[in-house]
Image 1 (cartoon, rainbow, N blue to C red):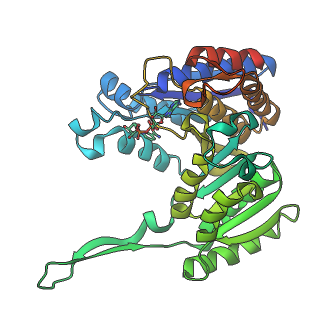
Image 2: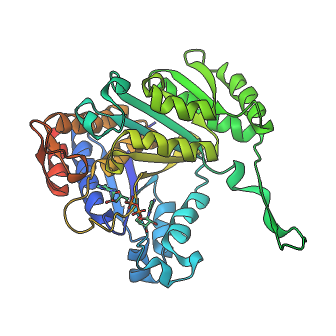
Length: 372
Ligand code: NAD
C-alpha cells in the first residue's frame, strides 16, 4: 500500500552532495505531480554540514527527522582535508553513515549496475563482451559475515620476533541468510527472474550453509531461476561474460568486492545508485538511498558532478520504499532518454562520441526532469 504522503528525509551532506541532491529533489517533485503523489521532502544537514550547523555529523534534529520519515535520500559525507582534524568516531562516515545504517537495521544493500548502450565507450570491456548491454543487480548482505563476526582481534604471538596473530571470524546464521535471500528473490521477480547466489561452499562452512539456505528459500519463488557460483569464478565471469547475470546474491565481504567490480563496468561512479533496506514492519520497509560514489571534492561546487546516481537513487526509493514501480520506471526511462539524446556530464563524455554534448549538473538534472 502506498501511503497518502511520501515522507522523505533528504540529507545532502558534503562536497557534490548538495548539487546532485538539488537535481534529484527537482525530479522527485516532477514525478510527484505526474503521478499525483503527495511528496513531502524535508532537508536536513549531515556530515560536515551537520558539524558546521549543529556540532555533530548526525545532529539530533536530523536523526529525529529520519525517524519520523518513511525513508532517507542521502547524498554523501566526508571531506578528506577536514576528516583528519577530528577524532575517528566523530568523523562523518562513522558518526553519520554507519550510525544511520545501525539505527535503521539496514541489512540489504542493492546496487544496480546498468550500462546504457550509448555509453559503451565508458566501459572498460570490449564491445563484444558488453553483448546486448550490461544490467546487473548486486544484492549484498550488509550486517553479518567477516566484517562483524566475533572474535575479531589482534594478539601477540608471544614469540621472540614479536609477531602477532590477527583474527577475523566469519559468522552467518540461518535467519540472516534467509532474510537477505528473500530480498534477492523478491527483487529478481521485479527483473529478469534469474538469481546467481555467490559463495565459497567448496572451502567455507559458511558457504555450505549459505548454499543450503538459499536453495531452500528458492522453493518459495518457483518463477525465479537459481544457480550457484563460487566467488572466484563469479569475479572472473563478471569481466568475461557480464551479460549472463541478472541478480547476484552475496554475503557481506564477497558483495563488497563484487559490487565494486561490477560498478567498474558502468564506467562512472556518477551513474550508480544504491539502496539499503531494513526489515519490513507490516507492509513497510525502511530504506536508505544514496549514490555509490563519495563527495568528489575534486569537482565539488563547479557544476561538474553527474546527478544521475542521485536521481536513480530517488527511483529506487519510489520502487523499494513505496512500491511505486511506474513512477520509478518513469525516472529510469527519463535518464535513458537523456543519455540517448547525447547529453553527457564530464565523467561520461568522450570527445570522439558522435552527437555527444557536454553539459553541467544543472542542465543534466533539468533535462531529466523535463523528460519525465
Ligand atoms: P569519490 O567517490 O568521492 O570520488 C572518486 C572519483 O569519482 C573522483 O574523481 C570523483 O570526481 C568521481 N566521482 C564521484 N562521484 C561523481 C559524480 N557524481 N559525478 C562525476 N564524478 C564523480 O571517492 P573519494 O575521492 O575516495 O572520496 C571523497 C570523500 O568522499 C572522502 O571523504 C570519502 O570518505 C567520502 N566518501 C563518502 C561516501 C559516502 O558518503 N557514502 C562514499 C565514498 C566516499
